[in-house]
Length: 239
Length: 301
Ligand code: SF4
Image (tube, rainbow over all chains, first blue to last red; front, top):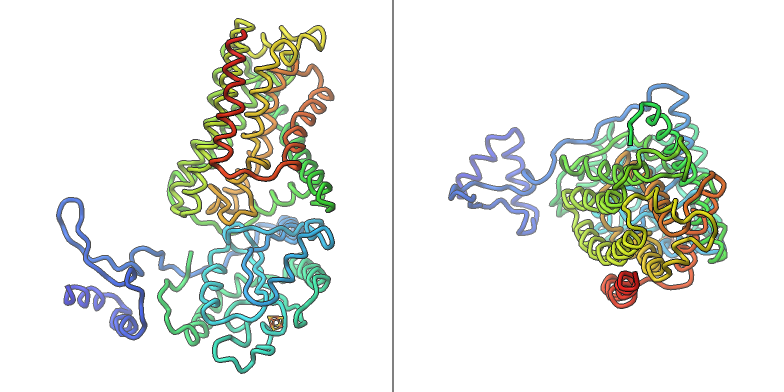
């Protein structure tokens, strides 16, 4: 079996390289290549990371046909921000009051969605440990273009009080394309509302093209991400 | 019934009115619900914006053919239900494509969307979708039972399967409404109505506050927009059936708007008063409370 796998990997353009990388990183057992028996008795190799996931990278998505329609869409995008309910650091606690009668962000067209597929705004709410970064990247990539990232609190800007932590990233912008930072440690809900308002202005002006930026500089982002995430056992782009 | 081409634009007009009314009405209901929680709630035009935004999403992915067809089936269920029952009684323009046996067809359409959705969501392969589908189907099926019984009861009562004739039999005075001639059937059907509106206390399947959002977990962009369109058409279509069967139908648009609002409001009212049921609780609730009412309604007739 080993030979078969090696042969198969060698036949692919980046095979030898990947074989090396597969050895170095601790890949989870269910993701390792393995033999599978088909219904009619034939045996073949399944390489989960290769066969179960789409390998294509993201592409730049051009704006709609005419200026006027794109403006309409941008207005709609700005007025209908669906936040992915994913809290990372202490800042997550400041998002909850936004749903309550006191701040009531629903007034501004801001809603929370439990699935990345439907969300278009990802709020990284504070420090991001490397382990969470991995999940954050996967969630971000599953959102559909156009999508926006807001960094909440000083931890996402320069590491904040976790600057010398062994386990958190410092500049969020190195890993995901951030459209807007909201400063503070931690920012009050009012600051969040103000931030969302500024984000709306950016979107309406057509300046929030983070998703396309990510696609254009995909290699750079991936290199940065892989530098900190040592156990990269997932496809390069999670569709 | 004779088919004439003029019915096509008439039906489209009905659809247009209902979609816009539905978009506004759902937002209004959410607003009323928010006011109960002392919030302002979403702006009244929010549904339009969400819809435009979802159609404007640039990329989308697919999980297979059924994944495409799920929202289409769902929308077919909603639109079909709407078009095959008379929206306005006695109006040539807004009777749509109703015909003699349309009651059975309506029952079928109510279920059609859920099934299509189940297949589509199943293909997305997301575990939350699978959980949502199994929860949703078991809840909708039990909720549908009392309604089916109630429908049989009134079909027996009026000796017809045509919605138009049932409405005709209720004209004249308020006391001719099924509500008063067969209160048991109406009670059973209204309880079942609560279950199919996807509002609290029976919204555990779809509630965005639950960790799995249910069947639509993987749906996004235009798929989601199609489903949102259906989410505004389907409740209204369903309410039209209820209005025709139990509350005397409507002869003009203002009466239509009012009655639809009130029936919708009933589910909202119950929703803000009672907390959410788990699925097995709601299934039991329907079997214990609504089903006997439906059986009693048949026996009484
Ligand atoms: S900025 Fe402050 S409040 Fe926010 S995550 Fe960092 S330490 Fe916590």
